[in-house]
Amino acid sequence: MKKLLVISALIFCGLLSNGTYAEKLAINDLLYDLDKVLATDPGQLSEEEFYEYESAIIRGSSGSGGYFLGEPEIQWILKSEKIFKDKGINLQDKKHRHEIIGWSYFSNEEYNRAYEEFKGINDKGGLELAEWFINNKGIKNDRVVIKEYDGAIPCAASEIARIENGRYIFVAYFKGPVYRYDKDKKQHALIYAPESQYDWPDELQLDDGNLTIKLRDGAGTFIFNNITDEISKIPG
Image (cartoon, rainbow, N blue to C red; front, side, top):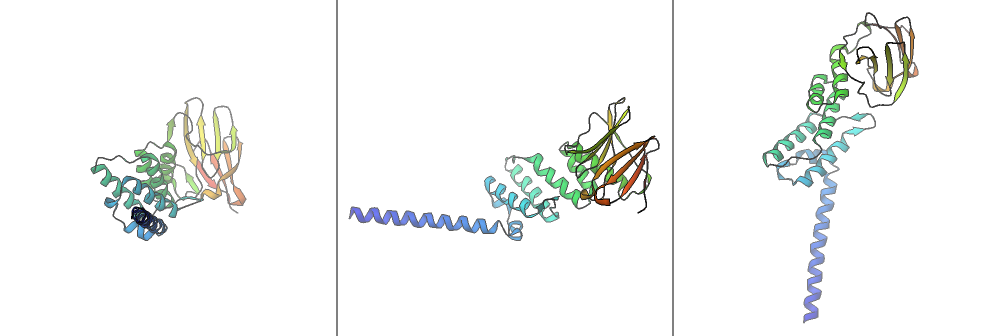
């Protein structure tokens, strides 16, 4: 009898284990269905479950070119933050979460919303790039609206090209913009950013105050006048 009870207990435990395993599989399957994830009420999730769902959302809305969360994904995350805050739970990785939201807005060309996200987490590089596009998107032959910022250039990307002329340093970044650094004022300014990150500037030439910016793979060439802040695109 005692042996039968032990066997019965083992079978019962096995059934519980299989049930838990089945539930886990169901959750894992759900996490690969973005529509079902977004249909889930975050108020019913534990903190750990939220992180799993959040990762699924980010994974399903990202690629080698960056983050591309749409409005439903962003609102689900923001709603979750509020729900957990009301419960007295401060979710981890808030800055990274809002970096992703900021860059998603940027990818969707919602530059004002991207600016506010970057401002909220003090992401200077993202903020300055968003502000440049707010003021200069689509510029080809006009005066660039340039804002000077104190301190060193905040761009974390790899340098592609650098050139100096005494007072000024010009730097082009991988999948990024062209910055100017004023050594006398100890200030930096973003002077040009390509419409597509894949057309990043890969060559700089400086001649008597005129900076030639050549984009990769023949995507275009621009001349920036460092005295007047005017830029022009060379035809062809």
